[in-house]
Length: 514
Image 1: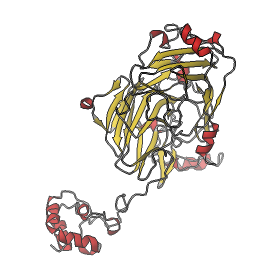
Image 2: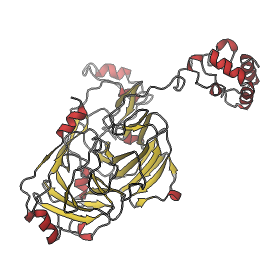
Image 3: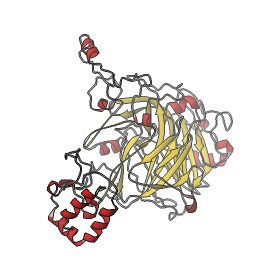
Image 4: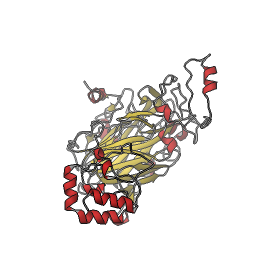
């Protein structure tokens, strides 16, 4: 049984005990009369951290393409007299931030972040919220248009939900888009402890803004000392763990995409700083904010989109470039784990004499920082319990030297529509990967004896002498030509020939039979 199967088996539904009609509020008498006959909806629980592939869209109401919450899942609902009923449970949870590190957090239905709520524009929803925290709480439906008494600001919208009680929120979904939910009661503590989630409202017209894959990423952060389990809730800016959906690299799942898919990535930010999210290999269009969909004529192209505090941005692209493409926050410290803020800089300092003395008392001591911190990614350093290295994660060619807010978009041919499993590392076609130059760096000029062109390329070159000559004459780059084992598929790219001198041009002309 693989990990995905085990995690699916962990997902179950359990009937909550102790909740009664007397613990309910925020709903009309008539609506409660209908609901009380059926009791509370079951509260689904998720214990595993793996990404749950979307289930088929429900056969009730308007159809939609379900979203995929990275390292998360979607909350089930039941239909009750035309109303979609959900059940959120605010409770202490244990969240595996990465293999070897667990945090004691607060969340919903067994996890932080909480499960994604999905519905359709025009739906009426009824959301039961059971409080299993040691203090009161509320739920604010961030960005949704609803009655003020359902807005979830404790003391303003309604009283806080006491421990052990269940309140009910009920409202109509009047617009589609990407929204969030989080407390507005003891907010500093409860959000710092991980209480947040997505609320996705699909358009009532299935033909509006369709995509093949729809990913959700919630940006959140924690301050957890190495060896400890509970976040420090008073931290304002100096966080040491920057997470996506309460997970840190290398244990953030990849975004798996089939070539030519239309892909949407929705990013919400409930941290205390902005995050410039950058994706390699693609440009994309920003198509949605918390305020709604961006009109086609108003969209703008990006490769990095800054997500402000308390905001959401969605962008879309066509997955036409196969490969493994990094996606990450471009604040460098946000791609680190267990980041210390008082580490001295030792670049240029010879610590070898000191190391010899220290090892007399601590034989396992390892010096670092003399020539940068990259060595930390491959050093097997002793660590406190319940923490992970600052830089970690291995790729096909060595340590990736990343952590925190980092993942990989994996674009492949032949991915089934419902397949989100990791396809492994991409194998770059010959001639499309950087290589080591082993020639004489002091004499980069091209000579015939230094390079033998493959017969197929030689024939192609002979047929296209005119174009070759033109390209050589227009070239302005001065670097050696490609070695034969790394020639690209097309000879034309070979003759983007890094030529700048008459000598180089003459040598290439002679080589091609000019």
